[in-house]
Image 1 (cartoon, rainbow, N blue to C red):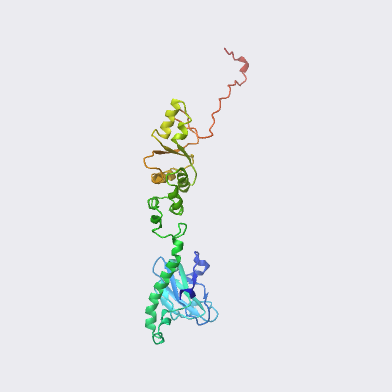
Image 2: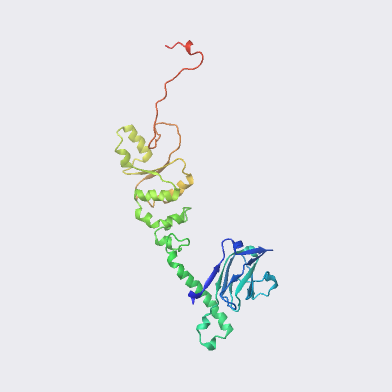
Length: 313
């Protein structure tokens, strides 16, 4: 039954598939499969209660629906269109500004067609079965979308997916949840490693950072004073990690990053986050980024008209 069903869906811009007239939304005329065809269902999403009128025609689409008698009218957002027959269909919604989207399903197909013929002429039974048929259609649609919603890259993933992928602790902290969920498998695989930190930093801050570990600077420093300066910057524990960010990194992004760093750095390992400033006064506690160069001051020169009058001793 589900395989023969076809649908019209509204565009995100409702004016592409209808028009607003004096507070009422009027859809365009939708063609069916044949004259006298029975339509199945009209589902609408609205921000407030709405009143819907449905019109059907077998001939050319009328210029104005307001001169026609509605085939069905009801204050509802989900209408079964049993008895609405015609080659084309149009509907109006009032108030029009409350309409968000809609879906029109056809052709009409009722589960009563599978019942004994003696029960197929009962209109009341057909309408009652139609309610369950709508539920059946909704369940089938959810089942069809289920494999797609299991993907972290899905635009509408399952609500439980972040828990299944071990990303629950990263949700609800103002972080880019969609990006973190899409990379959850890789983040969990690399958690506790330098690559894992670099991936996390790119996802949260949108830019890379330099990661300095204690052995990297300890092995290359012989001066006791420089060693003490580095300990104050990097930390003086048995092992430590420092994340160095460029000056343009926003404080808000760094705060969000700190909220999940404990989940990506091995237990007991101290860490610090340092944002390097573009310019700063240099003293004994200053840090020079990689590639920095200190030039000698240029020699002094005397200028001015009285240069020859100076006596230098």
